[in-house]
Amino acid sequence: MIKKLTFLLLLFTSVIFSQNIEFTVIVKDFDTDMPIEEVTITSLRSRQGFLTNSEGKAFISLTKTSDLEFSHSSYKKNFIKASSLNKNENVIYMEPITQQLEEYIITKDHPQEILKRIIENSKNILTLPVNLKIYLREFYKRDSDIIFFNDGLINFQILGNKNNIKTDILVEQNRAVGILDGNIDPNVLGYDLNNIIENYYQFKYLDEVLDSRAKKTYDFFVKTYPSNEDYLVIKIVPLSESKGILSDFKIVYDSKKKIIIEVSSYVSPDRLQAYKEGMFSTRKVYKLEFKNTFRQEGDFYYLANSKEVIGFEKRYKKQNRRIEVKNHMVITDFDKKIFGYGDKNVFKDKSLINKKTSFFTNYWDVESGFVSTSEEKAVIESLGKSKEDIQNEDKNPKE
Image (cartoon, helix red, strand yellow):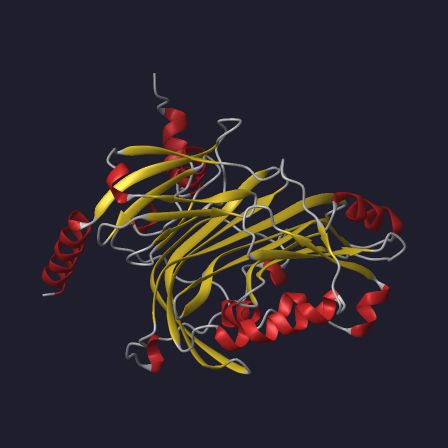
């Protein structure tokens, strides 16, 4: 009976996929013809979301015919008609805005006070409750080698209100390949899924620059945003005399609607190097990045995608080890309706790392909204091989 149900489920899934409109897009820079990574692609009719990989490529699987919106903070927004997306592989060009000079804006209020009001208004407008369907993936690197990978299709049921967000996590499918060992700090073994959405929806990553004392540590200023006259940018940069691992922040916001469109931060290599040389530590950070992209359409305002990267050096058995964890989340679909589920279906662990692999479709290619590059696919396939498989390949090498 179980086999029969599984067969029917697979058959039903394949029928749904076969009815979708599927094609590939490759997004390139108009001036250089180079691929553009992390372009947010949105179906204007179904609101499905996609993200380009480092090859500028995205696999589009639409439930209905739709025009597409292409957006990236360094490029002019591009809208492509569905009728022109008629090839299996479609090349889309975006015009860079780097040649257009940003202008400083003189404001009556301090930029920090402006930012506080924008955050509060954004929290008020974020669509709640909501079900976000998310593709999540994480790569773990030791020194120069990727040693572990996990990904999955997850439903985040976001309940509550702006001051008290509650998230229930329902895992549809997932996989994990590779081997983790004592070289990886347990504190970074996957971002805590139970509070990650709360952090994003309450803009907690900006807390360090909202305190009044931050004005003595950071320089705040507002600039124009050349690609969209309705947008402005708040930039927050650590003062040269400030000590510690302090990030550079960039907040793109709609100056009319007073909502955040994108928030990102990174620690400059010079500051990380100074920190590394200036103090003794068993764990020294060498990379720290974060980025959230939000989208507003009609009455809907929601997270579109996110990225976090942390890299650090750790002393292990009298040797320095470089550990890096990269996390991507892509919101592939959302709905204001919360569907029913029982408490036993709620995922309560912090990470997918220890969850047993379970999948019935190749969701990473069809439903993820963020396909792996050919190089990444080769690495994932290699991580999935058992020691016995590798030994057999060594004994019987391909000619």
